[in-house]
Amino acid sequence: MTDRFISVEGISKRYPAPGGRSTTIFEDLWLRVGQGEFVCVIGHSGCGKTTVLNILAGLDQPSDGAILVDGREIRGTSLDRAVIFQGHALLPWKTVLGNVAYAVSSRWRSAGRQEIEARAMRAIAKVGLAGAEHKRPSELSGGMKQRVGIARALAIEPKILLMDEPFSALDALTRGTLQEEARRICRETGQTVYMITHDVDEAIYLADKIVLMTNGPNAKIAEIVENPLPADRRQGDIHHDPNFYAVRNHLIDFLVSRSVTFRDAPPAGWDPRHPPVVRLGSAAAPAAEPASRAA
Image (tube, rainbow, N blue to C red):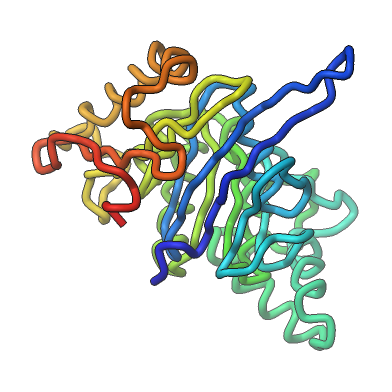
């Protein structure tokens, strides 16, 4: 496993503003994501989280810097990077199987119908929708529609899953179920995931690392929190873990107070090229250390 499977290298994003000026959404972001890691990004609206995800997807370009995947600079979209948005964006005239098979056919253009449908059915089964493959979106609940979106992304066997708050519009019970399934699937497949969320508990449950971004404009990556919870954690049990509240309190404290002060006055010694890696909890190191030394 390489610790630089995804390498964000000094990217900035600026937009034109009145009077010939420009607005800097974020600047000089540096981040490494290892192959097979599940990374969640947290920050207030306006800090550029989705813009970074769109650059990763090849849907946008940075004003400065570059993002590399497996050593190659991103230049446009690729089926190696699948995006799961908040909305399911299904084709209403196609069945569940048809929606997923459509994605499969875009990846394996020379495959026959039987192979395409077999690949689609395997992805549908992974998200627990076996038996619903001939239903159309109008016959599905919101949670089922989002499962189809996940199946569609998994079916093309991407190197990276990019998830933009995919569960935020669902009710609490459905959201919890899909979070559990997403974590199970990603652990089984060894999938590399870059996910945006505003839900602190969701990040703690899903992520190996949690990236904290300051408020925008001129947002920065303040620090990277390593999740001390066990890899085989279960959603209903994590609040019993002695490290859970140490992480939760740290994240909430950042969002409530430090996200603004950090942007305006970073602590002495902070280096944007090496955002500090923070380890919390009873078994963790007592202090943060630069990502370059922690890698």
